[in-house]
Image (cartoon, rainbow, N blue to C red):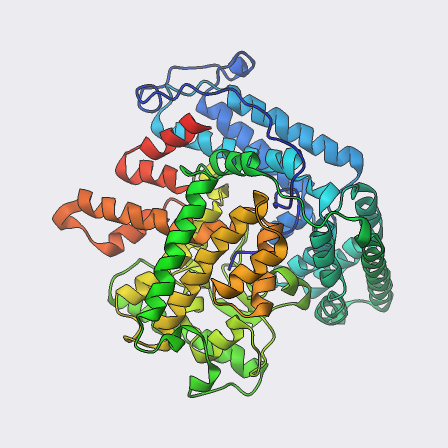
Length: 595
């Protein structure tokens, strides 16, 4: 499951424009990477030259600007300077931010870096990709104009980011919440004005989230109110009620507009390929990604069939020796399985666990996040977080649930736990947060992040953690099977080949999911273009890199060393990691040649 982030222009949504043509780069094999860097004045950037110090200053300024302009995202990342603010979605501010991003991107593109040292050139490519992402959203996805989830998400994440960790006293967090609540009616009014081309699917998801938000505001939020003075408490309640009224009115307004909305608006193949090359630095195009998904889907469906009992791939609580009686027991039992995984990793020297790792906890999923996160979501320590604790939010427990994730968690939570916790997201992202290179620390390539977590599921099978022909082994196959199905859904939805219902049916028939999970998965794919391809594509890239790494190491190869070398670089595109680990730039050069 993907780590959650606050909804903003940095999230994907849907399309409306063609990608802006961009000049081709000189990427001949002999000019890219290895020459020494001459001294270049930072003032020369306007004439096409700059040095790495200029680059790093631009990066630092960009991160500071981003953090202030997206205060909810900052809170979610553990930076609490602007906890009393929401994002300004006025038309003028939206345009100003888009113009600022484009100006920075043009400056970075203009840098002449062919003679820079390898590490500096890598950081230039990474910062460029970090700017390409929001620029693509501004030009193509135009989420503020098309996706009401941006505004409902600002409300839910605006409060949730203050609740999830005890970074300050309950009173101070409650006062920050009051300030944000007071701003919500005006922010939602901005959203109504901005939504000139709303997409029906996104509106329906926003309506569902808006109408499920009450418990977050009425129950979870009010746990912070105990230390408030009477007038402060009254102020919080008044602001909460007004915010809830505005959120429900926003949902009602959207519902009235549904008949006039376009059902879904795919971005098209050209835009999809642009994103793969420019943002993800991926040496594959849409057709190649889709073919990889079909190949892996065939493989994992067949591997399920080769099990002595193929039904082991479909989680079944009836096979469990212990069915938790309630939510608290369920969460405790889930979390308790982490230690045996840690002991196995240490005993087999499969990865080095740093001393700074905090606790990894299992918590209940807030209802407001359920429409697009049916299996829950991972919340790692933020890049600015002083608290090393991480969480995985699991849907509300019901032993009779047909939800795949609940059934899997009852029978054996370890495959998903390993994906979300250790050795998966929690460990990997905690390590990434400790990088000293700020550009690399800030990079969060989803293909690497999800690829590593999915790779870890099968790695634990192959290294003997799960008994042969066990339910856990079957679950790993089913998890990879439906992650493979995700590729077909993502590519075909966003290139315009499939309608939404076909995507749901594909998840059920090819991926082996129940209807509830399939609808949520398809909704998540529609809302976040390319996110669903990350798992299998990233795992495939890691497996390819593993084989080449072993060949290069020869008799000195050790699997645990590969894992340490892989994740110590942060969440970088694997075309870049390949260059770092193997000193082979061919994949990134292919990306640059083809875009």
